[in-house]
Image (spheres, rainbow, N blue to C red):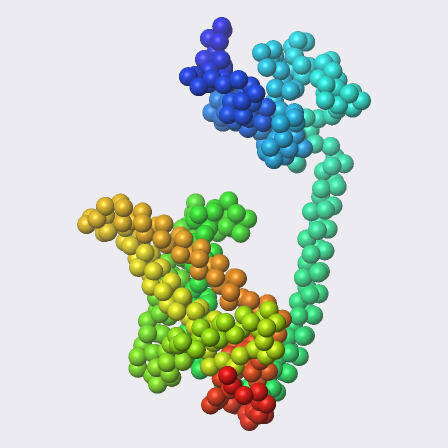
Length: 411
């Protein structure tokens, strides 16, 4: 500052202005765990300032990737920060003999925390990022070795597991086709399911990529944004497919006999409540046998009507957000803000319900695993639909093949 370098820090840059707190206060910018991540990095990670003053970049990144940085981010109050090595009110360039990071003083500086390792640490390179100048050649070759070995090992494991899965899949499918089955889903119902399945997955991935762009699964999608709005286009296309699937389903239940039968079978009834209580009693051992269900059990009805409700909510709020310019001509931002909140939380609820509820019923249920193939061929094996894990009715079933009599009477 005395030489007229206005970019140099003054007291207020480190300590603040009107809210100056002591270094032992966790809210203070000079509190131990805040020094590196909040205070020093404000200037030393400023690209324009570094370029103007010729300061080296990447100091915070190299600190954060070290043990010290990782421990600091986890909340450690004793781990070394910038001030531990560079000083506080006695900061000088490393070329200055008075500096705590001058070559002659490094052993003493490191020795404050590592008494017996000071000389070894002083001889090491500090603030070195992977694959940059200053990194040891040994470290470079070891990293390169693992960068090659890890993908090759995982590729072999995945390929091996895929062959094992595919072979068992063919065997399971062959056995599945030979079982006595009930026809559960018609061709049109399976088509509707595929449209809903594919559009829902794309909507979930592209929608949450907007909220969590730094997530590992979102980065490949948002990486396109600079050149092409891939995420937004894919989200809107998937939304269009879901709307078409909803219209298809609506026409199906209105104009087709099978669709009207679907709604009749899905309609909630008092018996569903008793089935729920009976099933819970069976799960905890109060009943020796699971209940016999109608064509669709209480769980499937809950899921179906929740899906209907969720689709309506997502379509309405999504349309408001899609046409936000038009909406704002006639309403206030409160409408679009409410639509944004509802759209997000309804998406969270729908995704959680699919993963926790639907995936268990069609994938992770031990009696179903690895997957319930009804969505492919429309058929459900008799052993699934007569034990309470599946869902066909013991009353007036529609067998593809003659089914053996069940000794248990329906409730």
